[in-house]
Image (cartoon, rainbow, N blue to C red; front, side, top):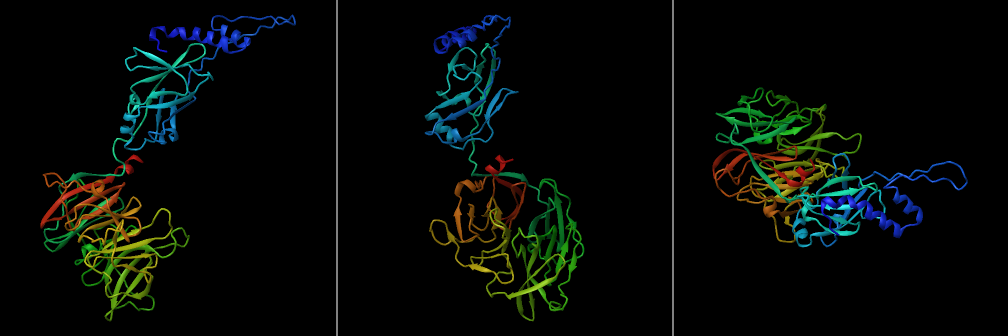
Length: 491
């Protein structure tokens, strides 16, 4: 039944008539108390007066929606009732793609509870406040006015006629949570590869970009990848191989062209790290490769230590080595002849549902992936032919691409002639083309993202930062960042 807003005060009288026919006599007497308070004298002859006062509670206690044809999410959603502000909303937005379904099937079953247990005391108020409709718990109502905006409101009546209004906001994701969004950060990377390759790394929340300018190793730093310090000369080492710079326990480690190992806590001052062990077995060894950081026992163990993995060479013999922060070196197996020691991508990662640390090396030159779970001395496995997911053939690793661990999976972006993004959930055994969901906006127009080789990537605050690189021989000075939409929702 529809009633004009100005006639709403008649609600109480109509309700009492309804109660008269439905309830016992004592409830009828209770309903009459909306007009007056009647004193009854006890039949025992005393003077006790009994007063009946109608409830003033005009609040929703529960609020639910359901339409399985649209989605079971409607019924499973938790709806917050803010009694102070008079707002009802679902804190966790419903899935992307439900709005078209709601437009086709706009109605859902609306159930609620209030102080009046038999219902019929809730009114749907029009946006212009010109019309209203009383609704019962279990009625079907249109969801369209409530989508992502409080366009209408519900009015609840207490037994004494008091009212309370609620705005309704049914929140639904309007962007695909499983898509990646790219945005330009700046176009003023201070060190580019005009003279040589560069590498940008994240140390203690700050970006550091390294590269040679006029044969002198320089670095520049930035908090936000937008404003950079002027390039400064690195001290303590003159021939650091830029691509070998790695992070280990909040320090930077790198090999020099001459095969020495250096470390730095601030990117500016570098000091040599002795390779000699207590028995002197590495005294003449040279560092061939810095593989990265890992752990050789379960991460959850109280004895777990982060270890730095290297490849050393001595007397024409190459072997794996690991060390802890005290530089206690341990020698492992000899290095296979086809194991990558240059131009590889190193990724250290741990799955949320596993306590084992993983180290993966991606070698585009041989189209192979090497990986180990903890044991970097003897436990390396070669995946010589990584596959495309779904049995679509062998996956060809783009040269000079970037691989990182992001959103609980390996992500490969950039690289020679690569215009898309690939992910792997099994450590690099199979790869899935994410197509337009993850692909950068490569439209070749001014301001758009250029496909690139030799770029650097870092992850900070769930954003992937992409620094410079080359495109068709041209040096790129730009910085981009990308983020999976759903990781922004969780913030």
